[in-house]
Length: 197
Ligand SMILES: [Fe+2]
Ligand SMILES: [Fe+2]
Image (cartoon, rainbow, N blue to C red; front, top):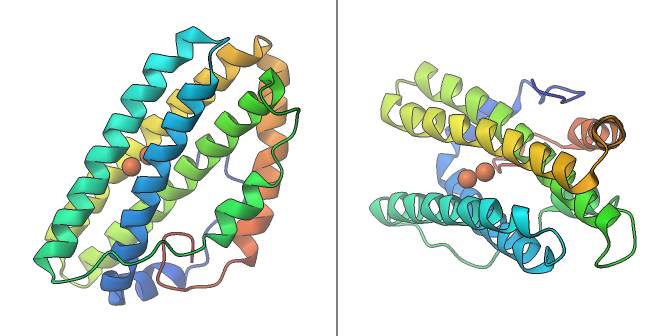
């Protein structure tokens, strides 16, 4: 899917569908982090003003997703709790290169974000299928709608990286490099009931 270089372990989706309570808590934090990271990038993009408003729009949409998941948590009597450490995202972001505040670093951050969106899209699709299998169609519809948003976010972040980089082949080459890193990280993940479990 998209530029992903490895598929999620087939054991993940049934496990995640079975413990949707745990997935939803983790998912809420992921949406919140996606909103914060889009805003953080917007605040650092002073020398690339054209990307500020698309990033603010992205942050707004992620915030709306955060709220949607919070409503679902409330409906199920679940608490948000403290943010879990996302080893996958931390490890991927460790590969971001370039001096702080520089163009290269901004391109890498946008590309890493695009890959996280692509992975979420793949996983929401798998989760929706597993939920349908269990007869939980309402939840499947919820995850299918979010899957479509993640696909769009992937395209937006990829395009912003190309715009900021100013050299499409070079930026796409870097995307391919980071996709290899992401694919290896994905293969090392287990089947824990978490978005990047
Ligand atoms: Fe989202
Ligand atoms: Fe997203």
